Length: 252
Image (tube, rainbow, N blue to C red; front, side, top):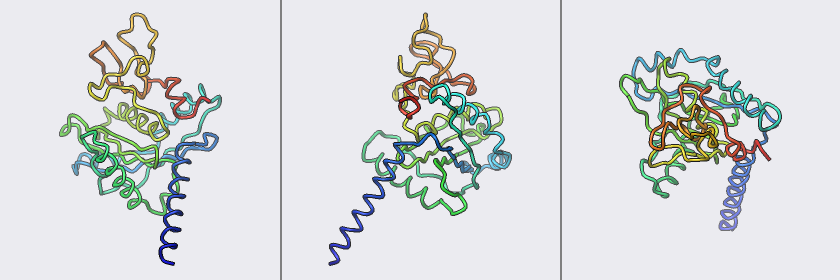
């Protein structure tokens, strides 16, 4: 009797997980996308806290316009994105593994999902995506660790600088991770950081090929030569390729 109950519960859990995974991989773009952002004082500095207190929803309007404009060029009509600034969290997301071990990645993914479940409160509602924004004072943290996001689960941990001077480049990183949650794949070499030709280039048909003037958003960087690239200063320095649009379902 108890064995049948346990098997039934397991089947129900697997069904729910399967349905959620299918939903996450089959986004209905006819509906508005709600993105919940939770800022976190990752380095526990007073300067970082001061920056977080000044963040407003108005700061995110540029991202909404960027996504609506580009989605319309592929999807045929603008997709509506609404960004909501959630409460500041005190607990950091689990640390992303530095190795590429499959087991480490799976364990981290489970820990991250559990973290997201623990941090969620009723007032958060049911957002399409939840991103955890880990802010660091650039005077103390010169280089940020790699951000990452999960398509199955629609959550991401994003490392950003607590500086108005870098708010524009922060938006590039935020959009890159956001698009990951909808299925967009990285288009740069994980070993070198260089955008992959041609998928990671904004204009792979350009002659001469280098230097490029913009970055493909999932390529991450603007290629200057076969071995050099630079970080886009703002979203105007980026674009979304047709391949990235296809990966997200913007192109049938």
